[in-house]
Image 1 (spheres, rainbow, N blue to C red):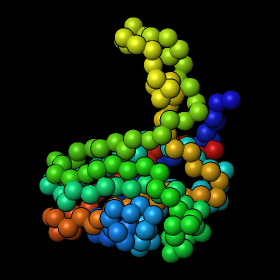
Image 2: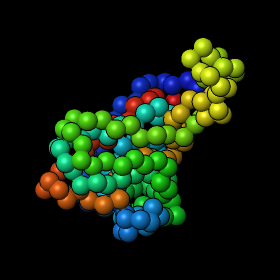
Image 3: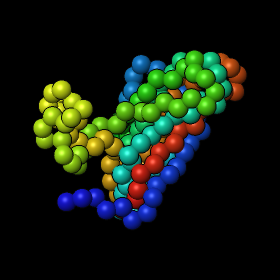
Length: 169
């Protein structure tokens, strides 16, 4: 059954000065002060995100990972490793101003039409990932937060924007 969206979703958050992790290499050691809300589905029927992009606001930023968290915490201050998990991430750093980086998202259970056999542009049969759309399902009662594994320290005060688009159910 196809997913039906009720209204478009387009949201963003600005991150940079505070890390979302207490230890930059442990994705389950979350610092709630560094998490910024992007999508709130705590009071609606949920959402589907079809893309998340990072926009660099300055050149030559500190290399960091932008992390996307799915959380059932009732507020930013109540985020813990028990109620919040990292579901996607992408590396940023040394980018040109305005450069966009797309965060890879997981395959959904929604098939892509007409990919059962090799297409004219493909030499082999498509993989299971090729046969599915990618995205992120946000259930009712959950939220999406974004943050960095380490704060951007160079240049001073540098930040990045994280944009999400899709639709609400």
